[in-house]
Length: 314
Image: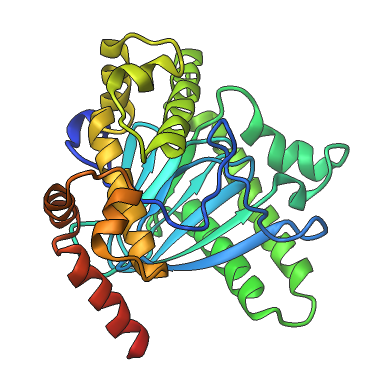
């Protein structure tokens, strides 16, 4: 059974900078998913190599745990998904994904624009999409096979993923049909959810998006809680409280984790020396860089690069 926890009950949630997550000044992902005519893209992610950074986008997203166990962070909630379970994430919601306790895990995800179900002047939009986009709609749905309507949604999302992956004849119509069926079920159960987002929570999430973006823009520089809080005109204490409530960590812990994930990306994609990678990512002291990297990755930067090379060769 999937476990839902709040950040207050979780002392740490690793983040990463998975290379394809590109954001604007508000932290909104800029990656185009699919095309203008068929706005959906599906992904297969092996979480043994990296996690998926905190980000948000206007599209809907669904995540299916196809192997092992993974943790999905959605605002201040943590969903622990076992194989066969899934999560549907609403438009504009801050989220991230990581490996659970070092266990091997694989996920399938789909990111699609709401207009895939139909334009705003159609009955499809009114019945299937609008309830999900209305103010106060749930930020996410946890999907379990033991609940009949949720099992139907899981089957629809899996079918849509496979259709986009294989691109068999007429897959576009089949994909739209299965996603519309899933959305209809989700929309029908919007009113039964008790965890709707308050206006205060929305404001807190928007502030967090801006603070995360500030770290992304300045991670190679000296960063303090005061500077991060200044991005959104918060006091240092309010900034600390916001990070703990939403992400379960302090701002400086987030900076440390973000720098390490940036370093991991450089180790994977460049031939820079270890010391140069550390300097590029804001670590002025080489020994501290190695120590911090080992704390978060359970190996040194050199060992991490060697693992990546061995996997590529194998």
